[in-house]
Length: 351
Image (cartoon, rainbow, N blue to C red):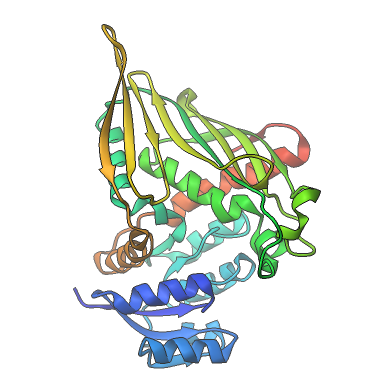
Protein backbone atom coordinates (compact mmCIF):
# COMPACT_ATOMS: atom_id res chain seq x y z
CA UNK A 1 0.00 0.00 0.00
CA UNK A 2 1.40 3.38 -1.02
CA UNK A 3 1.65 5.60 2.07
CA UNK A 4 -0.96 8.35 2.33
CA UNK A 5 0.53 11.84 2.29
CA UNK A 6 -0.97 13.34 5.43
CA UNK A 7 -1.13 16.77 7.01
CA UNK A 8 -2.14 17.49 10.62
CA UNK A 9 -3.74 20.81 11.52
CA UNK A 10 -3.46 21.59 15.22
CA UNK A 11 -0.42 20.79 17.36
CA UNK A 12 -1.95 20.72 20.83
CA UNK A 13 -2.13 17.65 23.05
CA UNK A 14 -4.38 15.63 20.75
CA UNK A 15 -2.73 16.93 17.58
CA UNK A 16 0.65 15.85 18.94
CA UNK A 17 -0.79 12.38 19.49
CA UNK A 18 -1.89 12.23 15.84
CA UNK A 19 1.53 13.43 14.71
CA UNK A 20 3.30 10.77 16.75
CA UNK A 21 1.01 8.04 15.41
CA UNK A 22 1.37 9.20 11.81
CA UNK A 23 5.14 9.52 12.06
CA UNK A 24 5.45 5.91 13.24
CA UNK A 25 2.97 4.45 10.74
CA UNK A 26 4.10 2.36 7.78
CA UNK A 27 1.14 3.44 5.66
CA UNK A 28 1.36 7.19 6.28
CA UNK A 29 3.85 9.77 5.04
CA UNK A 30 3.49 12.77 7.35
CA UNK A 31 4.33 15.65 5.00
CA UNK A 32 2.99 18.76 6.76
CA UNK A 33 1.79 20.19 10.07
CA UNK A 34 0.11 23.48 10.92
CA UNK A 35 -0.53 25.48 14.07
CA UNK A 36 -1.12 29.12 14.94
CA UNK A 37 1.80 28.79 17.37
CA UNK A 38 4.65 28.65 14.90
CA UNK A 39 7.26 27.66 17.46
CA UNK A 40 5.22 24.63 18.56
CA UNK A 41 4.65 23.49 14.98
CA UNK A 42 8.33 23.91 14.11
CA UNK A 43 9.43 21.96 17.17
CA UNK A 44 7.15 19.01 16.37
CA UNK A 45 8.14 19.08 12.71
CA UNK A 46 11.81 18.94 13.61
CA UNK A 47 11.26 16.13 16.11
CA UNK A 48 9.33 13.97 13.64
CA UNK A 49 11.15 14.95 10.43
CA UNK A 50 8.17 16.71 8.83
CA UNK A 51 9.20 18.68 5.76
CA UNK A 52 6.60 21.47 5.68
CA UNK A 53 5.22 23.71 8.43
CA UNK A 54 2.33 26.14 8.09
CA UNK A 55 1.02 28.80 10.43
CA UNK A 56 -2.51 28.59 8.98
CA UNK A 57 -4.57 25.47 8.40
CA UNK A 58 -5.98 26.85 5.15
CA UNK A 59 -2.47 27.02 3.71
CA UNK A 60 -1.85 23.35 4.51
CA UNK A 61 -5.14 22.48 2.82
CA UNK A 62 -4.00 24.24 -0.35
CA UNK A 63 -0.76 22.21 -0.46
CA UNK A 64 -1.03 19.99 -3.55
CA UNK A 65 1.24 17.35 -2.00
CA UNK A 66 -1.17 16.69 0.88
CA UNK A 67 -3.77 13.98 0.16
CA UNK A 68 -5.52 13.84 3.52
CA UNK A 69 -5.80 15.96 6.66
CA UNK A 70 -6.52 15.44 10.33
CA UNK A 71 -8.28 18.36 12.01
CA UNK A 72 -7.22 18.66 15.65
CA UNK A 73 -8.40 22.03 16.89
CA UNK A 74 -11.46 23.27 18.83
CA UNK A 75 -14.84 22.30 17.40
CA UNK A 76 -15.86 25.89 16.73
CA UNK A 77 -13.43 26.20 13.80
CA UNK A 78 -13.24 22.65 12.46
CA UNK A 79 -16.30 22.48 10.22
CA UNK A 80 -15.29 25.46 8.10
CA UNK A 81 -11.83 23.96 7.58
CA UNK A 82 -13.33 20.54 6.89
CA UNK A 83 -15.59 21.90 4.16
CA UNK A 84 -12.62 23.75 2.63
CA UNK A 85 -10.50 20.61 2.79
CA UNK A 86 -13.13 18.54 0.97
CA UNK A 87 -13.44 21.35 -1.55
CA UNK A 88 -9.69 21.13 -2.16
CA UNK A 89 -9.95 17.39 -2.79
CA UNK A 90 -8.55 16.26 0.57
CA UNK A 91 -9.78 13.34 2.65
CA UNK A 92 -10.68 14.44 6.19
CA UNK A 93 -10.51 12.89 9.65
CA UNK A 94 -11.91 15.31 12.21
CA UNK A 95 -11.51 15.26 15.96
CA UNK A 96 -14.45 14.78 18.28
CA UNK A 97 -17.02 16.10 18.79
CA UNK A 98 -17.55 15.83 15.04
CA UNK A 99 -19.01 19.37 14.95
CA UNK A 100 -20.88 21.99 16.97
CA UNK A 101 -24.27 20.58 15.94
CA UNK A 102 -25.95 18.18 13.52
CA UNK A 103 -26.42 20.82 10.83
CA UNK A 104 -22.65 21.28 10.64
CA UNK A 105 -22.22 17.52 10.22
CA UNK A 106 -24.68 17.58 7.33
CA UNK A 107 -22.64 20.34 5.70
CA UNK A 108 -19.54 18.14 5.94
CA UNK A 109 -21.40 15.21 4.40
CA UNK A 110 -22.64 17.42 1.56
CA UNK A 111 -19.11 18.69 0.88
CA UNK A 112 -17.43 15.26 1.03
CA UNK A 113 -18.57 13.88 -2.31
CA UNK A 114 -16.58 10.73 -3.13
CA UNK A 115 -13.82 11.54 -0.66
CA UNK A 116 -13.26 9.82 2.70
CA UNK A 117 -14.52 11.53 5.84
CA UNK A 118 -14.48 10.28 9.41
CA UNK A 119 -14.50 11.20 13.10
CA UNK A 120 -12.11 10.33 15.93
CA UNK A 121 -14.94 9.36 18.29
CA UNK A 122 -14.22 5.74 17.25
CA UNK A 123 -10.98 5.62 19.31
CA UNK A 124 -12.17 3.12 21.87
CA UNK A 125 -13.32 0.58 19.28
CA UNK A 126 -9.77 -0.22 18.15
CA UNK A 127 -8.49 -2.16 21.20
CA UNK A 128 -8.81 -5.95 21.03
CA UNK A 129 -11.68 -6.28 23.51
CA UNK A 130 -13.94 -4.03 21.42
CA UNK A 131 -13.52 -6.30 18.41
CA UNK A 132 -14.34 -9.37 20.49
CA UNK A 133 -17.47 -7.72 21.87
CA UNK A 134 -18.60 -6.51 18.43
CA UNK A 135 -18.32 -10.01 16.97
CA UNK A 136 -20.03 -11.57 19.98
CA UNK A 137 -23.04 -9.26 19.75
CA UNK A 138 -23.24 -9.79 15.98
CA UNK A 139 -23.42 -13.55 16.57
CA UNK A 140 -26.84 -13.09 18.16
CA UNK A 141 -25.80 -14.68 21.47
CA UNK A 142 -27.59 -11.95 23.45
CA UNK A 143 -30.89 -12.47 21.64
CA UNK A 144 -32.96 -9.37 20.99
CA UNK A 145 -31.38 -6.29 22.54
CA UNK A 146 -33.31 -4.48 25.25
CA UNK A 147 -31.07 -2.05 27.14
CA UNK A 148 -27.74 -0.44 26.28
CA UNK A 149 -26.27 1.12 29.39
CA UNK A 150 -23.46 3.51 30.29
CA UNK A 151 -22.76 5.06 33.68
CA UNK A 152 -19.39 6.76 33.93
CA UNK A 153 -18.74 9.20 36.77
CA UNK A 154 -15.53 10.86 37.88
CA UNK A 155 -15.45 12.58 41.27
CA UNK A 156 -14.44 16.14 41.87
CA UNK A 157 -11.01 16.78 43.36
CA UNK A 158 -9.14 19.65 44.92
CA UNK A 159 -7.89 22.64 42.90
CA UNK A 160 -5.80 21.54 39.87
CA UNK A 161 -2.05 22.14 39.68
CA UNK A 162 -2.37 23.82 36.27
CA UNK A 163 -5.13 26.12 34.97
CA UNK A 164 -7.99 24.21 33.29
CA UNK A 165 -8.19 24.70 29.50
CA UNK A 166 -10.57 27.52 28.62
CA UNK A 167 -12.27 25.73 25.71
CA UNK A 168 -13.16 22.51 27.53
CA UNK A 169 -16.39 23.69 29.17
CA UNK A 170 -17.37 26.45 26.75
CA UNK A 171 -20.44 25.97 24.56
CA UNK A 172 -19.23 28.56 22.04
CA UNK A 173 -15.83 26.89 21.61
CA UNK A 174 -16.50 23.18 22.16
CA UNK A 175 -20.19 22.76 21.39
CA UNK A 176 -20.77 21.48 24.92
CA UNK A 177 -19.02 20.07 27.97
CA UNK A 178 -18.66 16.48 29.18
CA UNK A 179 -20.98 15.30 26.38
CA UNK A 180 -18.58 16.68 23.78
CA UNK A 181 -15.46 15.58 25.65
CA UNK A 182 -16.45 12.05 26.68
CA UNK A 183 -20.11 11.38 25.94
CA UNK A 184 -19.48 11.13 22.21
CA UNK A 185 -16.96 8.34 22.93
CA UNK A 186 -19.54 6.46 25.01
CA UNK A 187 -22.22 6.68 22.34
CA UNK A 188 -19.85 5.83 19.49
CA UNK A 189 -18.63 2.80 21.42
CA UNK A 190 -22.12 1.53 22.30
CA UNK A 191 -23.63 2.21 18.88
CA UNK A 192 -20.55 0.82 17.14
CA UNK A 193 -20.27 -2.48 19.02
CA UNK A 194 -23.96 -3.07 18.32
CA UNK A 195 -23.28 -2.63 14.61
CA UNK A 196 -24.91 0.79 14.24
CA UNK A 197 -28.24 -1.05 14.17
CA UNK A 198 -29.89 1.16 16.80
CA UNK A 199 -31.97 4.04 15.46
CA UNK A 200 -32.55 6.66 18.20
CA UNK A 201 -35.91 8.39 18.01
CA UNK A 202 -36.88 9.95 21.37
CA UNK A 203 -34.55 11.53 23.93
CA UNK A 204 -35.27 12.75 27.46
CA UNK A 205 -32.21 14.37 28.99
CA UNK A 206 -30.95 16.62 31.75
CA UNK A 207 -27.63 18.42 32.15
CA UNK A 208 -25.94 20.16 35.08
CA UNK A 209 -22.97 22.53 35.27
CA UNK A 210 -20.17 22.26 37.82
CA UNK A 211 -21.26 22.60 41.44
CA UNK A 212 -19.88 25.42 43.57
CA UNK A 213 -17.74 22.98 45.60
CA UNK A 214 -15.69 22.15 42.50
CA UNK A 215 -15.62 25.53 40.75
CA UNK A 216 -11.81 25.60 40.91
CA UNK A 217 -11.69 22.63 38.52
CA UNK A 218 -13.34 24.63 35.72
CA UNK A 219 -11.92 27.62 33.88
CA UNK A 220 -13.54 31.03 34.42
CA UNK A 221 -16.56 31.65 32.14
CA UNK A 222 -17.26 27.93 31.77
CA UNK A 223 -20.94 27.45 30.90
CA UNK A 224 -21.20 23.88 29.60
CA UNK A 225 -22.33 20.76 31.43
CA UNK A 226 -20.16 18.57 33.63
CA UNK A 227 -22.88 15.99 34.33
CA UNK A 228 -25.72 14.61 32.22
CA UNK A 229 -28.32 11.87 32.26
CA UNK A 230 -30.43 10.69 29.34
CA UNK A 231 -32.99 8.08 28.34
CA UNK A 232 -32.88 7.36 24.60
CA UNK A 233 -35.63 5.23 23.06
CA UNK A 234 -34.73 3.62 19.75
CA UNK A 235 -36.80 1.95 17.06
CA UNK A 236 -37.90 -1.59 18.00
CA UNK A 237 -38.04 -0.55 21.66
CA UNK A 238 -34.34 -0.72 22.54
CA UNK A 239 -33.41 1.81 25.24
CA UNK A 240 -30.08 3.55 25.85
CA UNK A 241 -29.62 4.52 29.51
CA UNK A 242 -26.82 7.04 29.71
CA UNK A 243 -25.14 8.97 32.52
CA UNK A 244 -21.76 10.66 32.24
CA UNK A 245 -20.19 13.11 34.65
CA UNK A 246 -17.00 14.67 35.92
CA UNK A 247 -16.42 16.92 38.93
CA UNK A 248 -19.38 15.19 40.60
CA UNK A 249 -20.05 14.41 44.26
CA UNK A 250 -19.82 10.66 43.75
CA UNK A 251 -17.23 7.90 43.80
CA UNK A 252 -15.49 6.80 40.61
CA UNK A 253 -17.74 4.54 38.57
CA UNK A 254 -17.37 3.16 35.05
CA UNK A 255 -19.84 0.62 33.67
CA UNK A 256 -21.02 -0.24 30.18
CA UNK A 257 -23.60 -3.01 29.69
CA UNK A 258 -25.56 -4.58 26.85
CA UNK A 259 -28.70 -6.48 27.92
CA UNK A 260 -30.67 -8.79 25.63
CA UNK A 261 -33.38 -11.42 25.96
CA UNK A 262 -30.89 -14.31 26.14
CA UNK A 263 -27.90 -12.75 27.84
CA UNK A 264 -25.96 -9.64 28.77
CA UNK A 265 -22.41 -8.29 28.62
CA UNK A 266 -20.51 -6.29 31.25
CA UNK A 267 -17.85 -4.14 29.61
CA UNK A 268 -15.11 -1.58 30.15
CA UNK A 269 -14.63 0.88 27.30
CA UNK A 270 -11.29 2.29 28.39
CA UNK A 271 -8.06 0.29 28.13
CA UNK A 272 -7.36 -1.19 31.56
CA UNK A 273 -4.95 -3.65 33.13
CA UNK A 274 -6.47 -7.05 33.95
CA UNK A 275 -9.54 -6.19 31.91
CA UNK A 276 -12.32 -8.69 31.21
CA UNK A 277 -15.58 -9.01 29.30
CA UNK A 278 -18.25 -10.84 31.30
CA UNK A 279 -21.09 -12.75 29.65
CA UNK A 280 -24.22 -13.53 31.65
CA UNK A 281 -26.17 -16.25 29.83
CA UNK A 282 -29.83 -17.04 30.46
CA UNK A 283 -30.49 -20.71 31.18
CA UNK A 284 -33.92 -22.23 31.77
CA UNK A 285 -32.30 -24.84 34.01
CA UNK A 286 -29.62 -22.86 35.86
CA UNK A 287 -30.91 -19.29 35.82
CA UNK A 288 -28.08 -16.96 34.82
CA UNK A 289 -24.68 -18.49 34.13
CA UNK A 290 -21.69 -16.15 34.16
CA UNK A 291 -18.49 -16.64 32.20
CA UNK A 292 -15.54 -14.55 31.06
CA UNK A 293 -15.37 -14.48 27.25
CA UNK A 294 -12.24 -12.32 27.05
CA UNK A 295 -9.57 -11.15 29.45
CA UNK A 296 -6.32 -9.35 28.92
CA UNK A 297 -4.87 -5.85 28.72
CA UNK A 298 -5.97 -3.42 26.04
CA UNK A 299 -3.30 -0.97 24.94
CA UNK A 300 -3.84 2.79 24.97
CA UNK A 301 -1.64 2.88 21.87
CA UNK A 302 -4.40 1.08 19.96
CA UNK A 303 -6.73 4.03 20.50
CA UNK A 304 -4.14 6.26 18.85
CA UNK A 305 -2.39 4.18 16.19
CA UNK A 306 -5.42 2.16 15.15
CA UNK A 307 -7.37 5.34 14.50
CA UNK A 308 -4.94 6.97 12.07
CA UNK A 309 -4.00 3.70 10.35
CA UNK A 310 -7.67 2.91 9.77
CA UNK A 311 -8.15 6.36 8.22
CA UNK A 312 -5.18 5.89 5.91
CA UNK A 313 -6.35 2.41 4.90
CA UNK A 314 -9.84 3.79 4.23
CA UNK A 315 -8.33 6.39 1.89
CA UNK A 316 -6.43 3.76 -0.08
CA UNK A 317 -9.29 1.24 -0.10
CA UNK A 318 -11.99 3.79 -0.92
CA UNK A 319 -14.14 2.85 2.07
CA UNK A 320 -15.56 4.53 5.15
CA UNK A 321 -13.33 4.66 8.25
CA UNK A 322 -14.43 3.01 11.50
CA UNK A 323 -16.77 5.92 12.20
CA UNK A 324 -17.84 7.71 9.04
CA UNK A 325 -19.63 11.02 8.96
CA UNK A 326 -23.06 9.39 8.73
CA UNK A 327 -22.38 7.46 11.94
CA UNK A 328 -20.96 10.56 13.62
CA UNK A 329 -24.16 12.37 12.66
CA UNK A 330 -26.20 9.88 14.73
CA UNK A 331 -24.02 10.61 17.77
CA UNK A 332 -24.41 14.35 17.20
CA UNK A 333 -28.18 14.05 16.79
CA UNK A 334 -28.43 12.37 20.18
CA UNK A 335 -26.18 15.06 21.65
CA UNK A 336 -28.29 17.86 20.22
CA UNK A 337 -31.47 16.17 21.45
CA UNK A 338 -30.09 15.85 24.99
CA UNK A 339 -29.36 19.58 25.02
CA UNK A 340 -32.81 20.46 23.61
CA UNK A 341 -34.56 18.22 26.14
CA UNK A 342 -32.54 19.65 29.02
CA UNK A 343 -33.44 23.18 27.97
CA UNK A 344 -37.15 22.58 27.34
CA UNK A 345 -37.86 19.98 30.01
CA UNK A 346 -39.56 17.83 27.38
CA UNK A 347 -38.58 14.82 25.28
CA UNK A 348 -36.87 15.67 22.00
CA UNK A 349 -37.57 13.82 18.76
CA UNK A 350 -34.93 12.62 16.27
CA UNK A 351 -36.33 12.15 12.75
